[in-house]
Length: 444
Image (cartoon, rainbow, N blue to C red; front, side):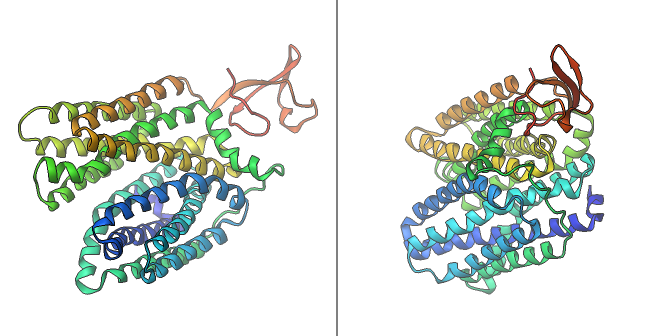
């Protein structure tokens, strides 16, 4: 798996990804402490609002940013956005009002919403071989999992030596280091767009490609199922472990660690698994496992007895299931768009997937609070099952790259028809099929 790091450009980009993630992890801890300093007992409400602002920024900004920046030199765009994030992190320790946190968080997350899809769309151009790209995607998933496990421990160690506000300095240094590593990488220039578009058309282009591609419609349903299961873990672990099971704060960290360990283990298995098994088979079995895990959770919490070992096992299964379900998504996006359309398509996936989390986060919390944990498990399992069944229906079992299709609306002299055969008044040919200017609908 590590052989992919021999590619110098990818090695520098992956290094940028890792140091930026580390800085973000430190910021998560520092932001919680800052909210407590400013709001005291209302810190939870402040953090909840900050999380909502983050999701709104992700959903609304990513498609617009892809339209505005997707055709610009990627290295310059990525470095600029990293420097914006570094500047916001430096400003956070100086805020004195809660509203100032909200403004800065929106700017920070808007920059991240612009940065991430463009960064993700660059990797397929750097690593055009699918096997190498699969290993790169897996390394990225592992970086996320290790960050969630190690950043809190790193923050705790640093807090022994410095004040909590200095953690924002670590965040800023992480983004600055990311900018430096991106600067040192030779990033392919984006291909020019085939035609000029209005801002609206450019903003919606990725979503139009996404929703017109059957395998990606299935992927959106997979995102919903994974968000339902993941929200149960991320939203309700603290209250369930502390209030229902009556365990300590350290046990909360242990439960979340089991979720991360499950995800990490799945990421390690994925590259060789995807060499032998189709993406569809891996993903659909994973979302089925997520539904089963939530149903087992509902059954176990409704019965008397010791639930702690069961919880740890379920959280590990959910972590593994989400990793198996979501990691292959990057391969589907790469396969479904031309290079010049990838920033828009990755931005669409970024926005639509986070819209699923924006739905599931509050639902998980509200149901658990208004009813109980068992009901939350049941509601989220129903949502995950709806996602799994929709994915099974929308994602075709037979999904070849090369598709025979016809054209009846192109001029006979069009370059695209150079290898087409005229039959029955329409031109027919076969090639790797993607939604674009010449192919606005998927063939039936």
